[in-house]
Length: 318
Ligand SMILES: [Zn+2]
Image (tube, rainbow, N blue to C red; front, side, top):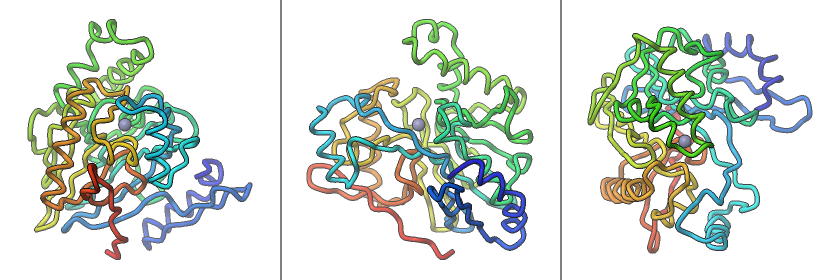
């Protein structure tokens, strides 16, 4: 999505989206990147879930650990991806239920450059203004999930309760841990502290399998961060497990769950959590969604050879 064109089309687009449920098409002036709004709706029981693309980042593949560069390139090619240009999705999910808007993760807010930061604009185009969001539920406090929670230091969602796990808050707001962290990760602590400060008395800290909202339960999935959680949505007989950052590079980590990424706080635990999650959802047939699964990031996990593969969900006609 090209930001300038998007802004140009936005007021009319938002009005249409709000009244008639029509999603506009933004056509870039240079002819590239013409794209229907980067959102896809589907139902989970009575809930309407909208996958929202924040954009993408060029994943530095040398961040992957536990497989050599040739192996990684081969796995990406097997997944029909270009190893020279692997773009990792950054997704967020809006849950609409009982007249409420709950946002699960906020995207980057542009913290990581111009190929990202679209969540709030896509929401607006869908007719959901920042003040309409009553809960911002955070899977973990990394910049690509909380960067979009603030704008110029203030809460991006002025009426939202910020729901975060105790383990992540304790970790990412600790000056002691920040001082011991490698240089390149220290800014992430400042960002987390800024987000907590911006939401002040609207911060709700949860632990374990907490009720996050009616029908939404937190699922501790530690490793990627100490307090990393998935969010289980249940409505009627339908359900969806939004698993946050269980997977970053699907073609590699689905096939080889033991491959970790340098952003994992605890590599070993992250790999175990991933293996456990795969085993569980394969066995149950649970539908999943993931913040770095290829947009819209919703589908199923199947056993494939010694590893697994991701099967995207088919289009939901609602
Ligand atoms: Zn992430």
